[in-house]
Amino acid sequence: MTRARTHWIAAALAGLSLVLAACGGATPATPTQAPAAAPTTAPAPTAAPAPTTVPEPTKAAEPTTAPAPTTAPAAAGEFIFGMVLVGPINDGGWNQAHYDGAKYAESKIPGSKFIYVDKVNPADKPNVTVQQVIDELVSKGAKFVITNSAEFADGTDEGAKAHPDVFFLHASGDKVLTGEAPANVTNLMGRMEYGKMMSGCAAALQSETGKISYLGPLIDPETRRLVNSAYLGAKYCWEKVRGKPADSLKFKVTWIGFWFNIPGVTLDPTKVANDFINEGSDVILSGIDTTEGIVEAAKATKAGKKVFAVPYDFKDACTQGADVCLGVPYFNWGPSYAKIIGDAQKGQFKQSWDWTAPDWSDINNPDTSMVGFIKGSALSADNQTKLDAFIKGLADNSIDLYVGPLKYQDGKDYLAAGEKADDKKIWYTEQLLQGIEGQSAP
Image 1 (cartoon, rainbow, N blue to C red):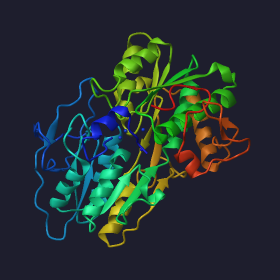
Image 2: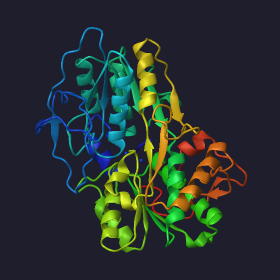
Image 3: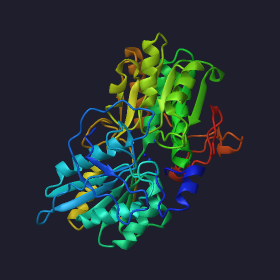
């Protein structure tokens, strides 16, 4: 899970040296009050604790605080790797998936130690830049640094140039692909498009109204291609599996403006989810980092409506509303992190742009698959069987949803009849597809 910015982010960052961001529990370290003026040093990194239960999201953003400096001195020969996270490590979504992936890597790499700084975003740490955080991690001994949002691209490259002997992994970015990244930076992303196709299919199989809504973050090529993938999965299973008329499927996306709720800046995802429900949607797909979609679907169902949900990013997200959860597409960063960081520890770092598909032999294998999908208990047994057949078709390529004719919202051809999309065509998606209601641009 590139992750791009909205107009408010661009304005906020005109006075900062960093672009901040991101389509997934642990006990945070004791916070200390952040300074009002721009700091000269970044918050000290925190030694990674063991995860705990994911809390239910609330409307209010967490206060602007910095983690307490609790990291112990490095042991002789210890290989320290750090992480800069855009959100909290216990968000039940994108950031928790990265945190868990780093803990997995730590457990697999002998002599390694994981440290991190989370909530690096304009609301929680408005005067802190990515490069400042990188400097702090390096000062604590980090020889490898992961940054987990595409809006961290420029700050990652700046940090890499300032620390040429440190290796960097920028998750979800593409500066290696474009040739702009320093030699000590590599890129990694999972092919979540497949997970979103599965999500859309599950939604279409279970929906009784044919009204499916997508809770979107901000608008960029990544989020557009994920919405398009969910729509294509829904369209296929609505028409080809259920035999329903194409025009009876309604698919809508509303963008909140960021990866999670920032009061006074973004739309409130709780309100957006309830708007979907009040408009008659009976499935909410989530593309944001937190779990408001499934939480509100569960509340509505408890109140007498029938609303299903598909959360995002984190394998245990269904626990927020098991009775309404159709399944969850999730990232499993651990195996890739362990391989890339382990290679760096051995002096075998290699720059690459990796867009990694699921392990089709077992998409939920925790040691091999970058992308998975766990079916939820709200998906009927019959529909689970149908979804399994759909997944099998994706795996053996008998189902290829990125084949034309497909048109963008403005009527321009995305793919001509019979044309198959290559990686760049999908990665740099310019618009939403025809058939989707919602904005294609900020």
